[in-house]
Each structure stands twice: as C-alpha cells, then as structure tokens.
Image 1 (cartoon, helix red, strand yellow):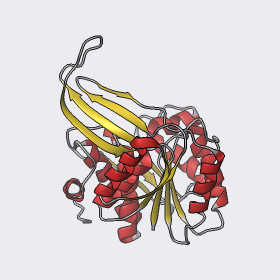
Image 2 (cartoon, helix red, strand yellow):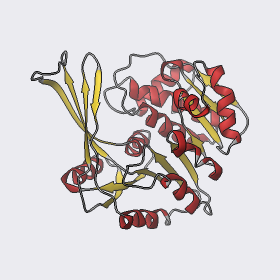
Image 3 (cartoon, helix red, strand yellow):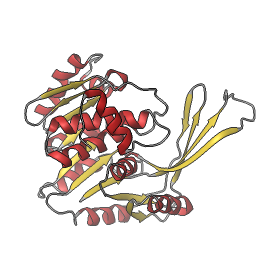
Length: 305
C-alpha cells in the first residue's frame, strides 16, 4: 500500500486573468478548483498512473471537508485527521503574463492531532511505501519528518522524502528510499551553485553517502539526474513541450518514479517515468495522465506503459 502525508492540504483556486494588474478589478476568464498540497498531488498523479494510495494529514472546517470530497470524487482515498481550530487553507494561483500565488495559513494542529497521525502511521506494514512531502506548518515541531522516520525505523518501508534544507538532511540517517531535491535546493544545502547535470552528480553522491538510497535531482528545463542505489548514474534531458503549469511538477516526478519502480523494480525505468511524469504535469493544465506520460516517454524511445 502507498501512503502520502500532507500536513497542510489545500484547496487550490487557480484562475486565469488577461494581463493581471494591481490596484484594479481583474476578472477571470478561467477557474479551476482542485485539492492541493504536495502529498495530495502525489496521490492524484499515482491515481492517474493506475496506483491507489491513501492520503494522510490534517483537515479543518468547510474547506477541509471540500478537500476530502473532491478527492473522493476523483477516486482518491483520504484518511485525514480533523483539526478542531482554524480552516484548511485556500491557495490562490493567478495565471497571467506572470504567475503569482497567495497561499493560506492552514488550521491549528494540536499535540493530540499529531498523536492521532502517529497512530495511523503505526499501522503501516512491511513493504508499504510512504511519501513525506512539503513544508511543516509553524504550529508543528520542525523535526516531524525525522521523528516519523525514527518511529518507523523498525519497519521495512520504502520512504520517499521531498523536502528542503534541514528537513531533508535530518532524515538521511534513516536511509530514505528516495529523496528529491532540485538542483537549487541541493546547491543551497552544500553552499554551491549547480548549473549542469555534471555539476549535480558529486553532490547527489554526497547526499547518498550521508544515507539516502536514491537521490533524484530535478532541474526543470535542464532535465534530471538520478544516483541510484545500485551505483548507476542516470542523466536525462527534459522532454520537449510547452510549459503551461508550474504546480505539482516535482510532486509528479516523485509519483512517476514510484510508479515506474513498482512496475518494474528497475531504476532506469523509474527514472525516465519520473522525468516524463513531471514534464507531463508541467505541459498540461492539470496533473499528468498516463496517456501524456506515455507520449513523452516515446521521445526517449521508451514504452513502459
């Protein structure tokens, strides 16, 4: 079974506006409302690729109920904990000449709520996959990811971590199955600027030496790099296409990597499926579909689906 954790899921209100301007009334010409949050995005894309998952995390108020309803409508299972204070956040994303975002705060999360999450995680079984993705709300301990991995260290789980800075570095001692920094985040961790795929390799290897099993580094239009657990280094250019959407491409790469690995146990297939799934989301108005991923894989002469 696959589980994703999103501490602060959202309603993403995505609007398109012709030539958005400050200080005046702007009218939308297109509106989309989706459930959002990095782990939720992973669950959405996994569903599109044919893999079920259960989304864990916290919800609150009428917005929280709407997030769960929309996920159920899209055949995505959720098992959120109901927080007693505040509201699940609404994130407003404005698509115009430039793309802008206004992200909400989210609910209050108590120690009791966190204990409930731990109890759900305690029910995971050997062989399960867990995805920890995104930032940690200020109302929660900054050590949540490492605390979770320490608590689960006695189980034979494959854990994927998509986080930055100390959130990522603090989990390496627990040997996550895959971590996915981008090249800027990886460079920030080690105090260097990483522009090319060859620049990335030694620092991805350093992260692997510190405990990560697989290090998957996204580089937007420059492609991606994987240092695999088996010692192989994979590099790829980005697929060709027009970027329409910056939301969820990294989350989609994580979902694609997991789907590709589950389908084959092969790291090369996992890598290219991840690369093409991330790009398929970037090239569409929504999240990657299996058909779009299959088409992009064809650019590399691959036919995994």
